[in-house]
Every structure is written in C-alpha cells, then in structure tokens.
Length: 159
Image (tube, rainbow, N blue to C red; front, top):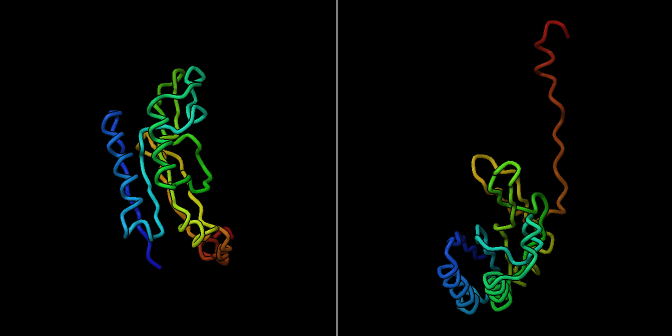
C-alpha cells in the first residue's frame, strides 16, 4: 500500500508559518496527494487551541492559532489519535516552565479509512526539547510474547 508523508518543521516566524499553511492547503488539492493516504508529521511551532499551552495566561485564540486551524480545515486534515505526551515541547525553565503541543501527526480521511486503528505515540524528550513521535499503523495488533530467557541465570554460580 502506498501513502504520502509530508515532514514539517514550522518556522518560529508567523509570516513564514503562513506560507507553510498555504503550501499544505495547496498540497491537499495536488492530484497525487489528493488521491492518496496522507500524513503530515512534525514540529508546526504553533498550537491549534489555547488548551495546548500549559500557561493559564494564554487562554485565548491568537491569529496564528486561527491560521493553523483554518489550514487543517482547508486541507481536510485532523490529528491522528495519539497517546503519550500531550505537551510535546517544553522550554525547560524550572519553576517558569511552559509546555505546548507544537508537534503533531495530521492525517486525511483516506488515511483513517485505510488505517482505522493507526495511532501516534509521543514519547519523552531525550536530548531535544521536543517529544519524539512514532506512527503505528495497526495499534490493535496484539504484541508477540517472547519466552523468558534463562541463559543469564544459568551462568550465575549462585543460581
């Protein structure tokens, strides 16, 4: 099965992010993409909703939020169901910490109808201030159980 994946690194500058929104809206109508299963993954450097910011002082809608939301509507993209970290970025500033959901996995309807059990997983940040993410195409598939290995215990003289 073929699918398209667009990797995103959104600029810190709202002007350049507006160009990204325009490009994603265009891509959604571009024939090879419009007829494909499509995922858009990465750091958008923009939240879609005030609840995606840990700061209580940011409980309002901004122009950037409206622009990015309009893009997802125009491109018919929505968040892939996910688990793990809800806030995918942190400024790591101790008592003044701010966390936001800047990283996303967006998919189109064709993706969801072909991979209805797909799931995004946002892990714990390592050396980055962002959470890594993975896409599992079939989250309902049972995990294989491997037999417990006794090899190490057998080599221990106290066993």
